[in-house]
Length: 87
Length: 87
Image (cartoon, rainbow over all chains, first blue to last red; front, side, top):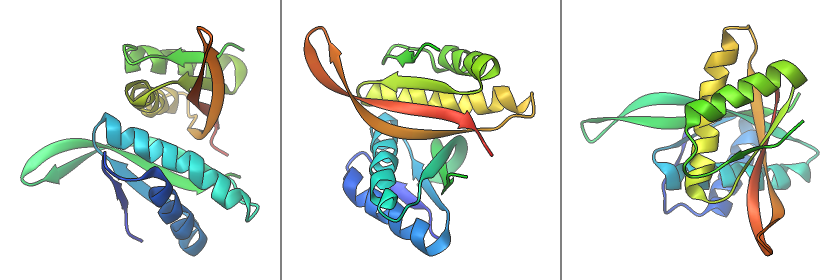
């Protein structure tokens, strides 16, 4: 399962569609964002994905955590959102 | 239970402490943020609160949704994070 990477320029509806697709295929998803604008797009995408998946009778929750990633040789702190069905 | 309101200037560790306190007292919490910087602080706070509450053996999840709020006579779209124990 691929990590859904979100940038400041990502459209939140497109990311929401990706989240909904991965949830339908795999039952869980992971989203990664670096920086305030990207994190904002990512969490908006989760809110929108909730409404998409509500049509399937599925609700989702997310668990944010910090992860260290290397981008072009630089260490960066990313925010990872683990997405699961609501139990 | 009071809604925890987060601004762009909120310290995420302080918000995390508030979330952990409300979770301990009430078993759930609500966080509200308007704008990308505030949303970023809010979600970082949830990540930090997860580590605080892990010391009590509790994990939390959040469910983001959009809500319309009125601020100084203006309609604004806020992001609300509903926080629950991880089941």
